[in-house]
Length: 266
Length: 266
Image 1: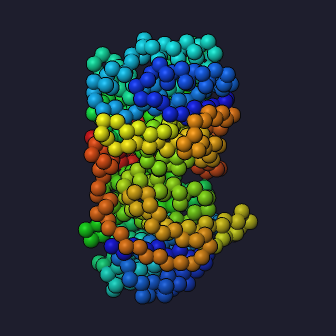
Image 2: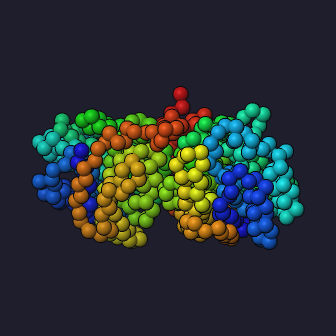
Image 3: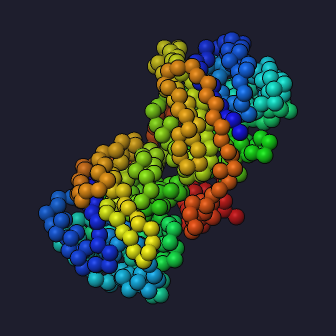
């Protein structure tokens, strides 16, 4: 399975331009699964609820979802793309999932970061796992990395590959994803953006790039530079993520001592 | 609060010698909390159940526990020391916790690694958090690091500092502890051993040293070399671990979306 990320700098508010940038770049890509950054079509630094609403689209009936669904269907490629979703009055920081049959699913970011809480509602779809051919795909978005429960929920749900659209500004995530992959024995494709934004008198946000693909043994198969538009494709064997045995005595999932864990659940 | 680890190479089966090595080295140490490696008094590579039983001791009535309790009481110092515990017929890979009032508690390793499963029973005390003056101390042992639920359980139980005796042979843990501290906003003192063991025709185990102290922002305050006996003391402010707010909008513990997490609990 050839998995890929496309790291680039979306232009704020220019949905059509960003969509065309991506489609032009992916035109001749030979991959099975491609991951785009969080909010790839709109940019990140919203400054009002109204602006966020105007730039959010319905899934799967909006322009971006329709266009990417067609694209994926035509080429028989799976794609995960972060975008602002409007559902009735609710706005979500979502990831659109499309594939050979067109629209395939949606994930809504569960853990919103910083001012995102002003613009978006927290995700209400849990941590769904989607079939991608014979492979099971989990999706999480950016700051979800910070909560080990996100990747763990996906792994417990059977995910072998995690698609991880991101707009990282802090330095911790690329190394932390090594731990996420190790502790769950999964692959992860983190697609981060580059460039910076400074809007509405707010502090400048500089995105750290360093998109990466990590394997179930915590090996960084590829890591992008911090400020370069780049598309990377890596061949992986997702079945490696089914091997949860660490040695003759330890099995990652069976060794969990669930009854002893505090979860904070009332 | 001055926290410390003592990284050294225990001699297999020589409880008295290891105890004296430690006490001699700690004689003039000025610290508030000292962490010793996993199984510091016995060594790690057991080759039979009988041998393990012979080297295990009762807590707090056995020699090692009594000696360290006295030592801690005399000096008014808190100490966490990995040791083999015998309780009736059961053997545990435990951590003894002693302090200014002598014996203070026991933790029994919840996630046993590899052949340890042949010698020890898995811990049955959960993830208790102990008062250490005004600070709350959690304990986990070595391979517990691999399961994010261990450190998370301690943090949810209020731990501000995690004492982490270890006998690491794989390379992943020192970096992973950065993620553990970040995701829980806690301090961790990992006390690993050095040297190697090759017993009973088994594969040689080489311990990686690199004991470390990490802060709630994932900063490595000190990391020891891979093969050097060393005692390190770092001054920390445990109250930093009470600040779970990441920014104006995010609070590490309140932002957990507990109802959405899969736990594997039936």
